[in-house]
Image (cartoon, rainbow, N blue to C red; front, side):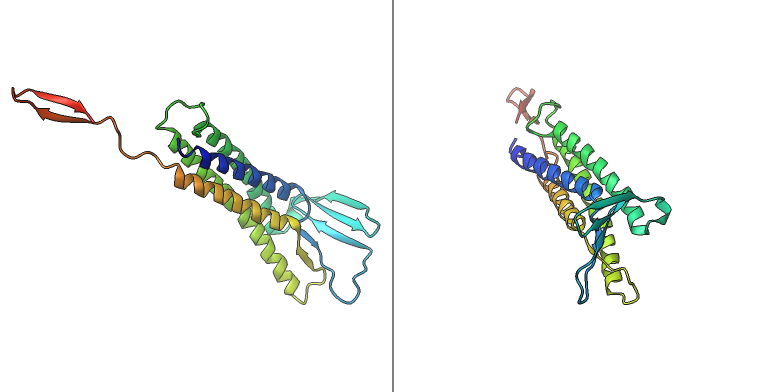
Length: 208
């Protein structure tokens, strides 16, 4: 029962991580226009996400358009779509499993099975965190390489969603790691028996 507080903290971290992954998936701020040079006054800027690209005018008006085809996307964005969606689904499933096997819930009455269920949820949260950190880091690496490449004219910078994805991945890894450390299956049993022989030669059993 002492793990209930740790599990509640893991649930909070998992929910925050899930929100961060959803924000990173939906908001088109993975890549933003880079303003370098002496003239920083521009008429418009572009913002690219997983699902659409937006153009922001200097007047504040914003126009977004979904990508016409998946095939025109870069390889990092194509992989990021699949991995982020899988991460969201895995995170939701792991949180549901954690609620079922947590010490502070009564969904499952078997106390011996609860640590194992929580351990499975912890592994799922860690996998969900990795599935976010990998595509975010991949996209960030490509943005940095293109920014330092003098032959690339349309330079981009890291958007806010990259940092949100990193933060969400760290939260999910932390939640999963805590669950794996504090929700181990119980070792040993308190219901064992000991055999002894009395003076009459009869073997008796005693619970220890």
